[in-house]
Length: 313
Ligand code: NAP
Image (cartoon, rainbow, N blue to C red):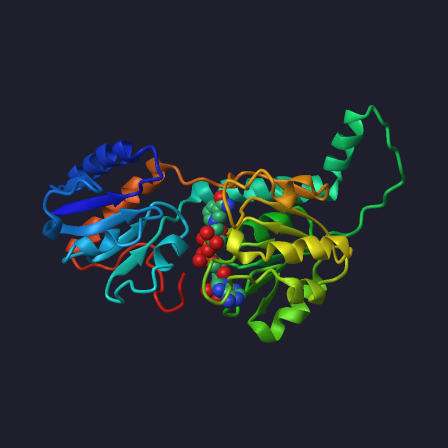
């Protein structure tokens, strides 16, 4: 039995190989863990553990059954539209990753709310900048009430904010105003003045944050995107900022990463940029989940954190 790691952009594949072999051995499984492209017996590979695998690299294994992401997102796997439907796709869900994302978002929301970036800029020019600035009641709205969206929704609500959330199917979350489906999107957008995008990247959500959506928001809405760069139509954000339809943005993800040096976002004073660090999966948390899924796969038991191939997340 074999497992292949396909992640040429990752520098820690040897660590994954070693730790995964140990985790599998602890479960009593003798599995040969190999790193693409050096795979001795492709016909023995049952599972691939991937991050941004190159084009055809998954198709060399005639008995492949499961493709596991090395992180929370699976869009890098599913962007291959020819992936056989009988291959099961799983991802990593980890409490530490969720907490880390919520900490990033709390920082972004509170920094915006208390205008900390403005004071930092004033400080650089030795300016006191005192003004009477009554706090505008902040009404955060979370796009996507999944693993990450629900956690930040609850934490913002616990801080006293009036929180709303939007998802595909209806949700009931105590103390949170929930909306579902396109039919309720306007009501959601009209209720909030800060939008946090935590949607998965799917055919339906690619380009979701666009000119038409911004026009449906309350004027002066603030945007935080920590999901995927492809959710945002970048030119539309610049236009909405210029027109004052949006007040500003904090962005952790971009269409092209690293963000090119000549990208207009760098010079936009009302955009805060972070280099896709909102929350990073730790191999120590992910590896035992991958090993456990290998065990379940060979016993034909239901896999952990399996995604719905038709929904795309
Ligand atoms: P998840 O658990 O799969 O939750 C997705 C949520 O989005 C669900 O509530 C789902 O609705 C909703 N949704 C899906 N399609 C929708 C649509 N068309 N319209 C409205 N709602 C829709 O995802 P997650 O684990 O919370 O991850 C969220 C995002 O964070 C992903 O894009 C992931 O890649 C990204 N991420 C970023 C970082 C970073 O460092 N920046 C780190 C980790 C994850 P239902 O509840 O009805 O299914």
